[in-house]
Every structure is written in structure tokens, then in C-alpha cells.
Amino acid sequence: MADYLELFFTLIKQPIIQAILCVIGSILAAKIADWIIGRVLSNLANRTSNTIDDKIIQILRRPIYYSILFIGLGISVKVFNLPEVLSFVLLGLFKTIAVIIWSFALFQSFMHFITWYGRQSKKDNIFQKHTLPLFDNVGKVIIFILGTFLILLSWDINVTGLTVSATVLVGIFGFAAQDTLANLFAGFFIMADTPYKIGDYINLDGGERGYVNSIGLRSTRIMTRDDIEITLPNSLIANSKIINESGGPKENERVRIPVSVAYGSDIDQVRSLLTEISKVSESVCENPAPRVRFRSFGDSGLIFQLLLWIEKPEDRGRIVDEINSTIYKRFMDENIEIPYPQRTLHVKTSDSLNISK
Image 1 (tube, rainbow, N blue to C red):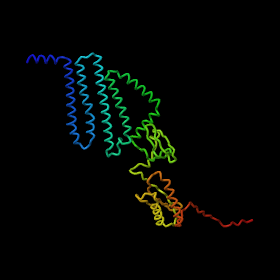
Image 2 (image 1 turned 120 degrees about the horizontal axis):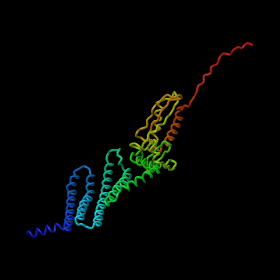
Image 3 (image 1 turned 180 degrees about the vertical axis):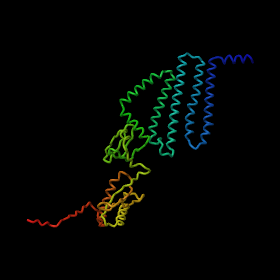
Image 4 (image 1 turned 120 degrees about the vertical axis):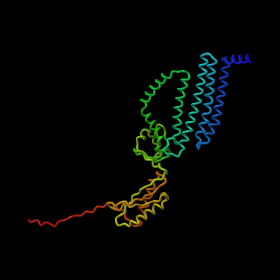
């Protein structure tokens, strides 16, 4: 028995045996960790009301498994006393593969998280359906830069000089492309803040008005009612007052049409006639119902205002023309006078003067 023990301890001291035991131990540890994650943690995650934790756990199973395995392989390489160059190459490969696997896992977890968070009921979340491509690209860039940095460290490459050079190049590029960078940052904030989205009908300070065709990182394209496409730099839009006529819970828009009638007109008749005109029109929404308000006493007549709702903001010009034409015709038929500015002149005369000769 003592001979067997002595032989066993002699074998244990051999580097190749220690390396094999390290590999076997790392495989067993990786399997145990994978079983714990797959059974215990997954069962705990299934008890929660959301599914985001289940997806993240499933994504992290693979990188955790390979990380434990590569740690064991790295220890076995050091124990086996391979040549320094071969040991350095193998360790570098293990670290590089581990960094790549973790990079993909982190990116997948990040995308699952922002997609889940964007589906929550909060309307002010920056993680919305239309902003996901933006965060997708930003996440890829950040994870790529971090992964590249860790891979360089894995091969013992001095990144200090590279960092300084990259910083100088970024500074020079930023100074040379100030306008481009301003548009890029403005595009990022437009996508995050979402003052408008593709398909909205907007008005800008400069008088531009039309549909939003596309929103890019550098510019926004608007299609006007004349079928002319206008490309506006995002930095210009970011500093402009934007009127989004398609914003709000619905795209419906209220239109105010002022109407003036002569003093002495029957206000009940005017109110009833305006209401009838708006309700008969197929272009006017039935709900909310049109309303008429007696606003003020004008210089030349009584000022009414017809309030009605339309389906699309781009139809406002056509519908106002239709309603105004109908109002004029009906007022003519009903003998309701539409006043125009008038002035009354009072001429003061004096008695004729008798001028003595």
C-alpha cells in the first residue's frame, strides 16, 4: 500500500500530470457552474414577473462556462512549463477568445435590456423603438473599443502610446470637423428626445413645413406639400422652435375660423348656421363636435369663431377654403350681412358770414 501511495505522490509531482488534472478540474468546475446557472438561477428567475432576467442568465451561461475552462487551461499551461514563447501565445489566445465571447454576451444582454425597458409604460423613456438602432450602434462602438483595449492588454501591448496618439488624432479631427460633430451630437439628442418622428407634419422657425421623411445622425429630411425635399442640418433644427402638428395622443387638429357679421344680425341664427355648416361637411370630425363662440364686439361687426376638428393637419388649408366658401354662400342665401370696414364722416358747417364790402 505504501508503495502505491509513494507512486501516486511521485506521479502527482509530474508537471504533465498536474496539467492534466488542472484541465480535468476546470472542465468539472465549468460543468458544475453551468448546472448551477441552468437549474438553480434559472428556477429563481422563472419566479419573477418579467423575462429579462431569464434571457440574461441564458446569455451569460456560455461566457461563464468558457471563462472557468480557460482559467484552468491557463493554469495548466503555466504548470506544464512550456517554452516561454509558446506559453505566452497560448495564454494570449485564451484571453482573446474569452474577451470576444464576453463582448458578444454583454452586447446581447444590453440590447435585451434596452428593448425590455423601452416596452415599459413610461412614455418619457429614451429607449424607444425608433431610438434602438442608435443605441445599437453606440453599444457596438463602446463594446468594440473596450474589447480591443482588453485584447491589447492580453498580449502585453503598451496601450499608453496608442491612447495618447488616438487622443491627439481625435482632437485634430474634432477641431477640423466642428460642424459635422455638432450635427452628429444634435442628431443623437433629437433621436433621444424625439421632438418628432418619421411621418410627422412639422413647422420650423425658418418657415419650412412638411412631412419628416428621414432622421439621420447628420441631417433631417422634410418633404413639403410641393413635393420638394428639404435637407436640414440637425444642429439647425436643435436650435429651432419646432411645431409638431402630428404630436399629441392623436393626429387630429383643431382649426379656428373667425367669422364677422353686421350689427343687428340674429346671433342665434348665426350660431345655428355655422354649426350646421361644420356638421354637414364630411371633412370635419364628428367627435369632438364643432362649436361656435361669440368672441367680441368688433369695430365693424360681431366677431364669432367656429371651432372644428380635422383628421390630418396637412388638410387644414383645403378644409378652411371649403368651410369659408360654404359660409359665404349660406350667408348670402340667408341675407346675413358680412360687414366691411366703414367710416362715418360728420361735416360741421357754419352760417354764411356776411362780409361787408
